[in-house]
Amino acid sequence: MVLLENGAAPEKPDSEGRTPKDFASASDKIWPHFGALGLERTPRWELVEKSVIKKVNQGVLGQDSHQRKSAIRMSSDSRPESAYAYNSDPFIHAAVTGDVLADQDEERNGKTADQPRFSMWR
Image (tube, rainbow, N blue to C red; front, top):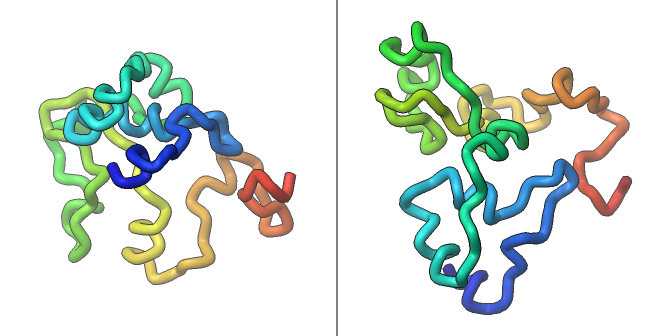
């Protein structure tokens, strides 16, 4: 909220085309802060397309995930009755596995260790 009050750009995309507004759109708890600025919520289909949330298979909904069994509570877990789940935060992944240099999305995005993920280096 402090960043928004001090001129942060909620519609400025990252290197993968996702915006803070997109991530806020996925959360009913955070969205009111962005909605108060007169922003329009990103549609669910677009959040799935941008990999902000992912569609969960029906068979997985009733099962406890491995992430929920870990000592660190995953704030990115979905509600049990929801058909969508947030993609897990890489910082939480690093804390759970202990490997802060690992990137769980390397294979999906075709990234290598030689290619930093920061947009200013592209």
